[in-house]
Length: 317
Image (tube, rainbow, N blue to C red; front, side, top):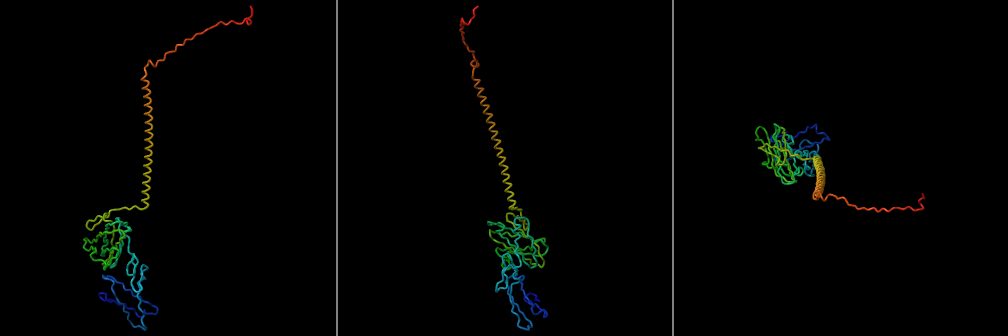
């Protein structure tokens, strides 16, 4: 039971439910609290047979295993990447996967609930001062998401000025769209908070790119495709370049060999022609008379002496 403005609420527990060994836990969850934290008190009343048990303040759901509960505090201190009263909600990082592409991160935000998205400039390769553009659009016909952007901390209604609330309630034709253009540098983290202020579920899409890759006319933005090669593609490209260089090297070697052979053959031909020419020139410089050979004149004499045989070798007639 509650009053009209929800400042006082009461929970009745039937007597038959009050049995030995039965414990009750009361959780107080704030919703639509513009200024937090908001203090409250719990009062237990009834016809007690014995003295009532001591109330013990505990963190809800043990912080869902994603946070810590202080010894004296009754609220959770969530680990990085988680939020909610019980650290039950994970901060999304899906925009990293669609960075500099036409693809979008699609979200659903329930009535009066928050969705958070983190943008880590180190993870998307921002190494120098740059400008990021976050494009958002309500893709459903119902719901009214409001967008809050904060650096280094999750945005809340209390921590973020309403001037940073980019609301497209005035957009025409029932289309809600817009964009943030924010300067960033390496190591910064941006947190985008989306809160649905209607009683119906809102559907929306988010896109992320460097400002030089975005063209916006009014509230309509187009992201040019920027393809980032994977390690396999880079290795394949390197192998292709090496193969092409090898082919070019082989072709150049073949050209050099062919050129060397051609030059050598030409040199040999020219040398032979030069020698033949010099030989012909040498022959042409000699007169025909000097080239005629005269026969030799040989004087020979023969002296013959008669031979007289010895007498004793000749028989007598």
